[in-house]
Image 1 (cartoon, one colour):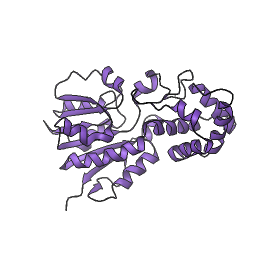
Image 2 (cartoon, rainbow, N blue to C red):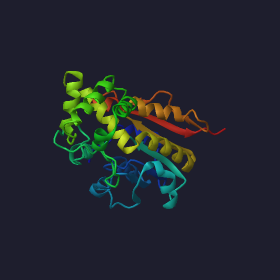
Image 3 (cartoon, rainbow, N blue to C red):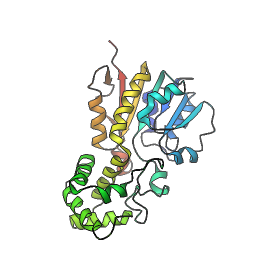
Image 4 (cartoon, rainbow, N blue to C red):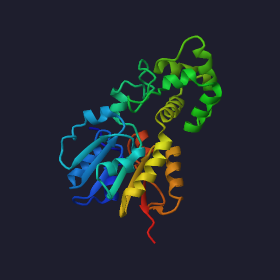
Length: 278
């Protein structure tokens, strides 16, 4: 099982209570859940990807309930399972290593023969391939620019339109070749941003994050904490803006980060949200 990047920091922040109720809103491979259970907490684990729930080795542990669902519906899921009010909630917005390396859904730009799918749940209908082959140039530009802030979004959108006139984009390699031609070179950072943009659009990630944060504040105890681990500035901005809406506040003005480790680990930011009790 892959260990979450900021597992130690999240666990310290949540201060797990014996028999306390905790929601792992992005269950993934079960790293946070296992750590919470080991400290005596009870967990409701949620994941949109049913394959994640099936493959986890912690799903047979006691004091654990797993639900296949969208964390945007966290309030509804918690109440349906009579699992509230809770002592803490964890949102880790990164992809799991299993999704990247084994899902076969085209999440990684390195998997050139995989289909352009990018769905977190196979129950969803929208795919990255559909977007690339059916959106207009201006619509593709909006997706790329708003969801990644890639400076070459216009050029890449135009190249996609040109390429699909001859053949639909079907594989990861089809998309990376479009990016290469649009910007005149191979650029891993550009790949990452465009793939991020498509994944966000396919899975409506920003809207779900906003709804998830709202829902979490409605089921958290007055002294509970919401831990959010983000991996890029757009996610982090949503979290910061959310805490300005009233009734809640950031416990840490500066995000907690991991200054050591691999590149993707260094960009992870932990923010803690608590109720603003007068």
